[in-house]
Length: 321
Ligand SMILES: [Zn+2]
Ligand SMILES: [Zn+2]
Image (cartoon, rainbow, N blue to C red; front, side, top):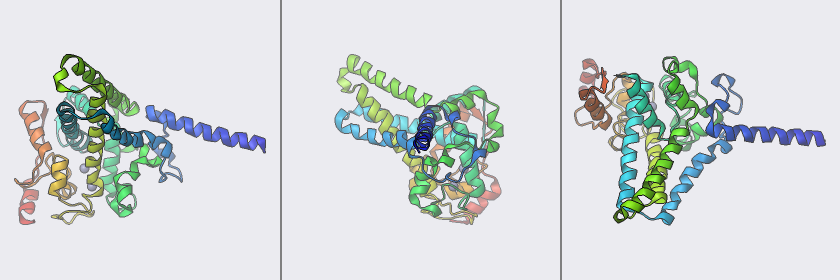
């Protein structure tokens, strides 16, 4: 009996240790091939840092606010949203334009600073979504409930893993594999840099009335949590609210408000109809900030070969709503 108790304690201890290691080193999490029966269960221990990020936002009441802190939060939201939509989504997941290896890595770093894990994890899950959208095999279809599609899906054991069979084209880059394995490294560096910058400003530019803790809370925690919830509205709300121009096999919708919030991703029905284009707003009035940003990067010769929307698809879009 005592032996069995001890074995049970050891087992729980091992699991806790694996969860703690998984916070830092995603290689501690088994490969997708090892799917288990409890894959759909939320792994609360591994989810603690995610919950902690939300609680840390409450520190705004302790650190106060300043114009400088708000601008930093806004700028980091915009920059990282562009990296997620332009690169994690339109580049790594869909390969809708080309970029050199250093440019690819620079934007992968910016994307990784969003605390949405590495580009390989993101692309593998997103490609899976396009293949199985709104079926039982889609982990974040709102048919499984709002909260599951918004946050629950990626806190499950299955959600933490990366199905490498979907990302053979990206695995050949060791720098991307490194980012995926140590996916907390970049966010931790950003948080530390914000703290140091805030302390430097407090010392050398006291008129800005900011400091390390304030820039950390606004620039990292508040900005990242807002960025996260805006991004995942595309899983939860853009498959529920809005218009369906194209009769796709899934429930995707076009929604102006979500498009503004996510720099163009809200034209999600367009995107499910034709995922191979770097552009998601198909009409001139369908505001797609990511597309404008990518066009600017192409004009500067930083990226190239942006794939347009084919004329036949545009003609169909004009005929629809
Ligand atoms: Zn979708
Ligand atoms: Zn997509």
